[in-house]
Length: 281
Image (tube, rainbow, N blue to C red):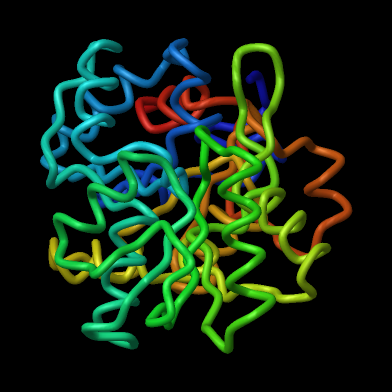
């Protein structure tokens, strides 16, 4: 970016110097730092910058198809060393929600094997069948989706009085060749068939952000969320009262921003441009 100013700016030419005061960086993953197994330029430099300023970075993802253990392994393959303290996922947010609102109750889950195992390991009483004692139907981003699963979910929602929740409202997930249907699109199929609409747990709810801020003792002025979706990433930051950075490497386009009521604090082409702005003296 080349602007006739003497300080760093974002895509729109907005003064980006306040970003240098941030110490807690909450990063989306899909479409923000990578796409499939392609790590975006600037990601490693950004993480190194955060470490050098004694800051913290947490990956906050709505993608419930993978467990934290799988995410750690994936990022290791991409050259990023992390541990469980670097993540907060929609599955983890869902665990908190279920324990607070439906303690000890039977939960039916339509999700991947990894999601189901993570919920079980967290002490959630799960089933994948239409049992009489099911009190809650939970739907995640299921990359192992089958018609049999959809049939079981619709059967419960159509024949029982149960609560209906879903991990995240994302309509599509970025992949190397474009996009695939995410949890929000899967839920739309179920809603079309049953007339039932879920409560969504992940972003844009501020739970992941506020939990991370509390854990690391960061205030709203020190915290920023970085993501590629307006209606989840950016909206969650707005709902938490913190600054937001939208990168144009995933779902959102400039046209989307111009026509949306959800406006990021800052906009950059990519994490590479974001990092260059932070390093700009």
